[in-house]
Length: 292
Image (cartoon, rainbow, N blue to C red; front, top):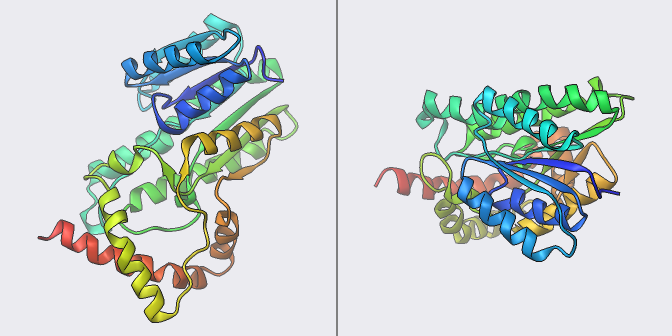
């Protein structure tokens, strides 16, 4: 089904983007791989060419999607090279690590520039071509942070909520046009995301808070959210690939995550009660990391 189709993936140099590139290449999909780290893209393209049985066309482009001319050039170059554009995966994104009162204006701007504003910069020009084709699929990578609140990365949480809302609005505009729009909401994924957060790596807080979270949950007899643990980028990519074959509105990659998102939408207080040990455990670690 995907042989001869053209897929554009932003933030393709690592993590989910790179894993999805491998998965699509196995489906004989031609690829446009975009990221700021061009050397990583060349390495990825070489890996894909060495692994796939049938050759696929791969174009790598250095691109900063927060810069509108770069994003528009990405779409234009795709059309000039391949003559079509079937799949756009808005995967580029980054988080941050700070409490609300310690989140700077610069961080807020950065979080929205990459995670939100870039969606318009790539999607607007892509839609012009997809509407001429009468087909296409826009896939926006959000997060469970787009459905539920989490402490110490509020600007990222707000930005990913915006990604979800953007996709819902986009779907309505595209009804019965032949173009699909999907938002993907992963939970924990084994990537560099937690090491590359602005304001320092958030991974240390996650790892150090674990024992305290379990202790608080036991002492207070609170059941923690029942969401599948950290998943590989490859596993997430396979679930996105399934959605490309059979488009749906939302993709929840981890077992239990959709159920928790529904709970949060219906009864926020109850969802927060299940999150309380996480909040208290991470608060202690955050204070020790920031104020010692």
